[in-house]
Amino acid sequence: MGGSGWAFSWGAQDDSESIGAIHAALDKGINWIDTAPVYGLGHSEEVVGRGLKGRSKRPYVFTKCERRWSADRVIYKSMKRESILSECEDSLKRLGVDTIDLYQIHWPEPDEDVEEGWSACAELQKAGKVRWIGFCNFNVQQMTRAKAIAPITSLQPPYSIISPEIEDGILPYCGENNIGVIAYSPMKSGLLSGAMSRERVASMPEDDFRRRTPNYQEPLLTRNLNLAELLRGIGARHGRTTGEVAIAWTLRRPEVTGAIVGMRSPAQVDGVIGAAEFRLSASEIAEISAFMAR
Image (cartoon, rainbow, N blue to C red):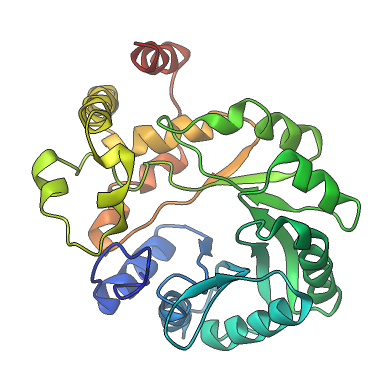
């Protein structure tokens, strides 16, 4: 929803389609939305604010801090107290809300400022600017350092069949310490949505950052598209989409509170909404594990 013209763009995006997707998701029972200032350099938050305007029942709104940008649109990192306090005020204005429900440090960078950044988030919570505070992309050691300063509500890590790395240490730590997990990229940036093909990858716009990632290039691309076909077959047994199977795989873990799913249009909501209640069987989980072990 951030659109084009920034470093990690997925290409051009119609704001009216974005707002339509927000409305369609809310109408089908979705009760939270996650965004960040850096998505579109402020634009995604503005779109979310427009999408929520006039809604009688507002969802929980999650956003982030730490990734900023200069006047020439170059992204930089800052966990300094004054920077985070300023970012929060900017986000409140763009989102059109009085309080942010979950405020997250986007990346633990620079590492030496973790304590200062987390202290600033705790300060915002105490002031009532934000209700809960959490992180994205933190490791166990960084979470342990932060936990000594203030309680951690949640962690937002990447998690998918293609990228299961957090299972080794991060998920158990979160489970042991009552830290909620909101997995991002459960369909690995669209690869496991069921809509991706070799032709579609080849036709992606030049400013779509996915073109530059290894999973969208050979030899991994062929494996990933074959994995999507396996998920399609599993979904067909239940009347579910490929994407719903990929999302359900992340939700099988008890530590995972929810999965973040990007939607670019109202039509895309129908392709993923079923994952909110669909769960894989043990044999289907084993089937996916066997494929990944090849």
